[in-house]
Length: 56
Image 1 (spheres, rainbow, N blue to C red):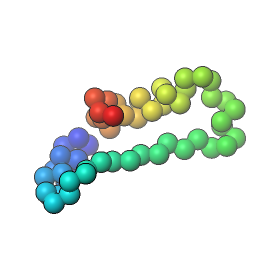
Image 2: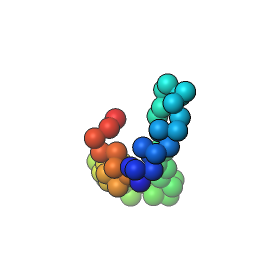
Image 3: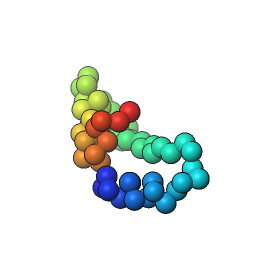
Image 4: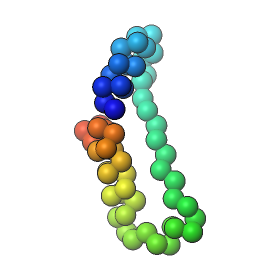
C-alpha cells in the first residue's frame, strides 16, 4: 500500500498540501462495548497496516 501512495504522490507535483484523511467509525450499538484505550489501539493497528505508523 505504501508504494501505491508514493506512486500517486509522484504524479501530483502541482499539489502542495498532500494528505490523507481516514475516519474510523464505530457503530452506535458497539460504543458501549469499547474499553478505555480500545479506539486508540484500533487506530494504531490501522495506521500500521497502512504503513502509516511513522506519520501523524
